[in-house]
Length: 104
Image (tube, rainbow, N blue to C red; front, side):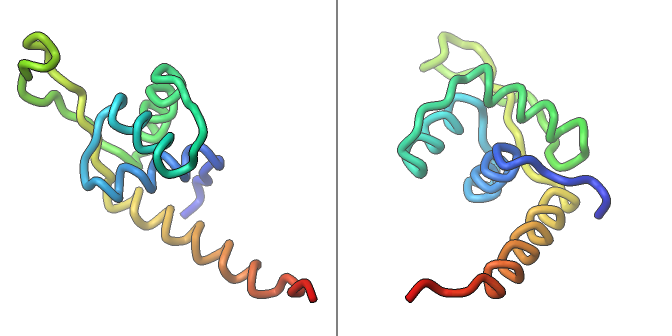
């Protein structure tokens, strides 16, 4: 696969894959829960749109929910290309990690 991912793109794509489908606010919570770091919703949305433009995610408008006052969520799910690119990235990192000398 010729397109590469930035570190934040990798994390957001992995979180979407973990959930099968997700939306911005949920990803903000997951990011905080998993990494114990803060991230803003606008930062997540920028990454989601970038991943979608690269063909690694697809979006659709979900059903309106009471909790959102009848507003609809924009839901994201990974494409086959998204799964493949993250799998390749993880394999490359693991290969390189195996070559790193272990500390004594």
